[in-house]
Length: 616
Image (cartoon, rainbow, N blue to C red; front, top):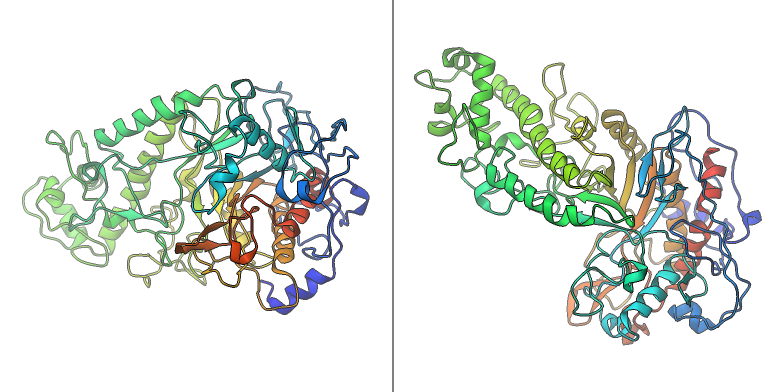
């Protein structure tokens, strides 16, 4: 990881990568071999005074636009429409060939690598592209003044101006100078906060329905509809897992299955024919495959098998996790006496339901559960509980919408101090169970698997198409070898590509609390403007992402800063655009020019940069 002196020297040494003129790009030779992460081709990020991109045609793919039109400072900063008669042109930098020989489809899809090639996201028109998204576009959440800015024009015009600003410079008749060259509004942008009408945000409504028609993704809640169908600990406390503190549905409970059916037949099915939908994210930071909580460690699901059971549930026809466990143990041991011998327990009689209904109920590391008991419970968790959970969710969602990409729950990656991709006790720097923060995760054997990442894999109609990372760092480079090894491990175990569903670089601002989001702040108090560093670190981090052949895109989080004068818990510089903060001289909706120039420099040439970096 680069520390402050090295990062500062690296930043000041570099020229800006041009947005429209590829001759200014400094690149190294192509990277050969397997999916390895190369270092920054030009030595690191860049902070020496970029100019932004110019306008281009309306395309859902990243472009290198140029109109030759002049621009006033006001239009470049605020994103107001440009009054110009220039004709918009574009150079998409995409490849509409399909190495598999399949005709282009009408929905986004993932094209697997051919030979030693890379995995691509393919647009509905058949173009290979690398997703560059911005989350939470045109949302009013916790940003003083943004509602007035969003309603300065009628919704259709405002949405198209904003999509022109974010994408190629043009959306319908609306044109904006210095676009960012993003090609997606990412996640959390589907909710309409332009007005009180029902329906989607005007950002993603089809063009013919008065929207901007921007490509987008959706995060759906896959939690249970009530505590009566959620996993609990032995004391009856409902599990709230992950950074998001989400309840975990019991996959054997018919009530939870009904919840997923309702989700699939409602939210999912209604979008199945939308070509602008890119990805379904099934959950966000829920602690199944990622960090188990806000504290370091991963979740030990063996402790949460004690959900409620329906009155007609039993071990022959289980409708809850604990009865499914009892049935599994009966399969494994045949008679209770054999289990008692292995577990050094004294369950009476011959009925395996005694273990889970009468007790004492086994709890690893706490009570009534020796080493063999812990092994047996983990086999059940991995092979039955979690596998069934993946099956019941993904098969139902895919049946309702066979057209779109399905991502695993967005993983909160954090840092190596909090999450180590399920590193076992047999290796240095082992992950720990989050429940006590000290017990290392045991090592997988041929019989028992503690690492659940293999369960992400696609198997027929079950499993996922994509793995998603939420990762934040205020450094120019992500920690190595932690991040590199984690990417490789997940791809090896799941066989799936990865998308960066959230990342961001923030800056501390004097007079703000600097709270309300991940603390991925650039170094403060040095000789470099913090906003220039944000832009430079964006360039460096994007470069690290696309160096992996199996990473298909990245989404910046978020669209605007968070700032509420009346609430110090929400005052953080995290966006591309400002909130109304008179004491800081900020006007709602205006750009942070130092960061957007550098973002555009990378985004508008993304396909050329990928080719120069990887040879692909």
